Length: 269
Image 1 (spheres, rainbow, N blue to C red):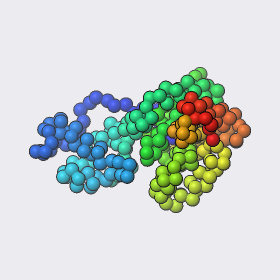
Image 2 (cartoon, rainbow, N blue to C red):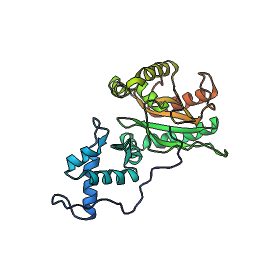
Image 3 (cartoon, helix red, strand yellow):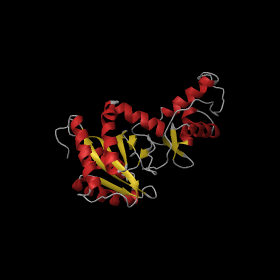
Image 4 (cartoon, rainbow, N blue to C red):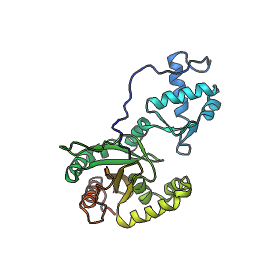
């Protein structure tokens, strides 16, 4: 999880995009939109990252121009820079994608439960959805009356070692799990151990994936018994009681079961 108190918001402003001659694309500002759309269309479920050289080659432009397009898209939240050469979908795109995949219903239904969970536990409560390649936070509620709260960045991708990522992989399809695990390298064994623990306990735990931040997440199921979302609590390391019978876990699992019921699940595993 990330504690940065910055939400992904689309802002209207002039982008510092390169201007190039291209007979196949509209001139001026429309060419900027055309180029940006071409870059975004490069992503798919099988291609979750692109490199600067990929953009330059596929769009037929110089590497410097490709870099500037990618930087501009990243500055607006459409993309997120991984390193000097690689980019992936950013928080703005991920948040929209997650919301559209399940529609607004789940967020609307979950918000009262999030608010109640936050007040009962005194911690930030978060709803997570799966985009096809990672979990993202799509809604959160903070407890009232506290001078300091953990603020979650809506739309930010949550990695496979986050509590939400672990929950989706533990209760998700074997194919999704294997694709995620295949990318982990030397950390695969540790993540597999955590997935086994999550399935046995009924919830997933992560600590210090982001320095000083801990989270616990429970699965939310749909009418077919498939995981459709996660509910999570986020707090500074050492604050959450992660024991199976502790109040934080008890309240979290009860809220996840209640949301599952509202979404048509007959039982919540």
